Amino acid sequence: MQHLNHKQLLSVRKALGKRIRSLRTKKGWFKQCLFADACRLNRSFFGEVERGQCNLSLATINRIARTLKTTIADLFEGIA
Image (cartoon, rainbow, N blue to C red; front, top):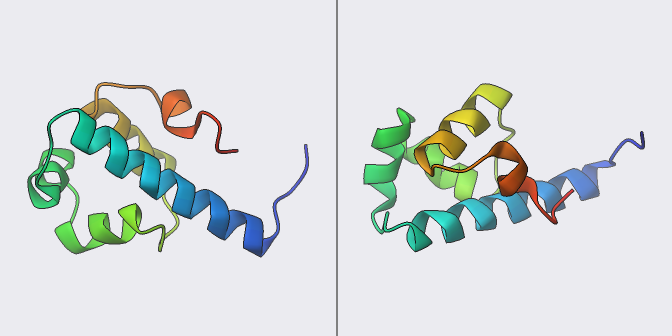
């Protein structure tokens, strides 16, 4: 298994954030703040998630996936 360098990790975070935003709006969650509340995440933190500005724990990724009614694998499809 190959380790990702810092630049690659930033790219993955940004791509994941874009994927989350895309799936959120496709599933009818047009208000970011309401989705963050449904995930039980701080609204500011969730904004950082969608901008790819923070590292996410597996638990947080799972919360987001469950709220989107999708899988963690689907969130990362084609990203990493």
